[in-house]
Image (cartoon, rainbow, N blue to C red; front, side, top):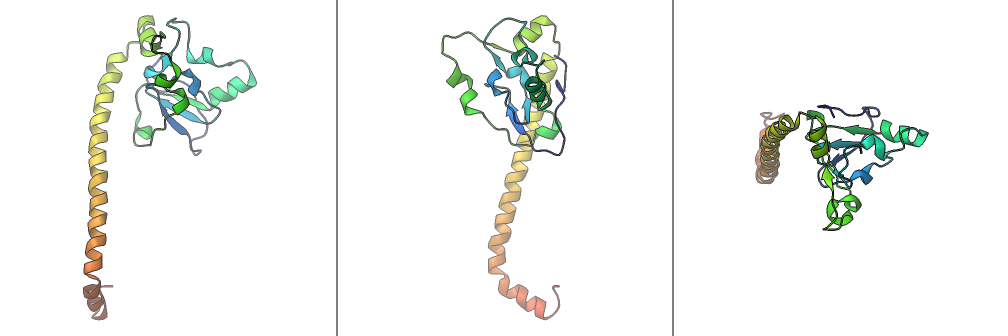
Length: 171
């Protein structure tokens, strides 16, 4: 695994489904255009290090090639996708798919054993992203309150704005 993009995806203008890697398994590889963020958190049922996402698809067939063309994977959440809404595939959640006693591994564990050295980097970048996301969320809340306050004030000041418009103080 490398830092950043893992597999080439489709066109940039087409809407795609943004899926978080945490608590999702390999069954999320759907025929729609999908973007996996935080792919180091994807669950793998076998603990073997030979299993990769390419092995989960039949990449030598036409259908497998199309599926790989529709798939983008990122370690962490890069800037174009950090402000997009992430969808959850309910049928593919770890809680619903796995028995409590069934063994599984996160993709980051076998990758780290093989030699992926960006685990610490992705953790620090994820912390920075979460800080920025909380600031962004607070700004959105303030803008929502600001718009609501403008609507409330507009109801009370309608008669005054009409008077100002008749005297050409407001255009």
